[in-house]
Length: 190
Image 1: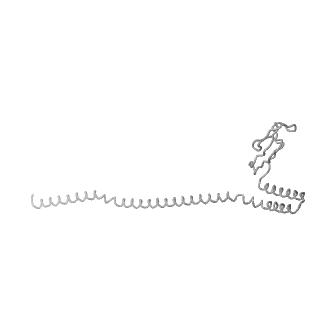
Image 2: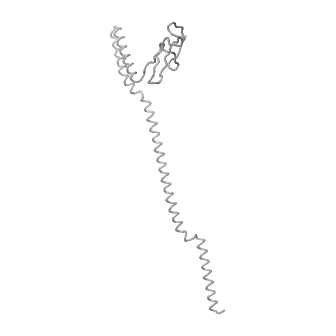
């Protein structure tokens, strides 16, 4: 082999080794062809992370808004409960005023008939005010005993009424619209 051929073989060997070494380094560094894909993945990951953070912030804001709404409605409900009777009490004030006038007039006047008439007028005014709000008396005397509307306190013998009929009302019962506010206390024929 000539010197020139040996030199060419030596150069080829060095070049082959350099190419092989560069290929190994490139493989160890992480494939330069895939570098743009990794950059795209990183950008996509960053975008998704930002979207997740935005969604988390919206969720936290919505949760805070709901908590505020719940507190506000609880406060309004408490206030409504405290002042629910305000309208009714305002309507009853004229009745109270009339009772005060009747008491004042009775102390300076000994005419009990006019006092009784005045008290009767006040009672009718009170009854009308309560009826306007949906309060009505429960009919009891002569009606069949019904434990939903009547509370029997005594059973009596009666020639006038059949068995199980309300004979006497001891205390009036009242309905508020369609609910029993207070059952009537009654005596029932036995």
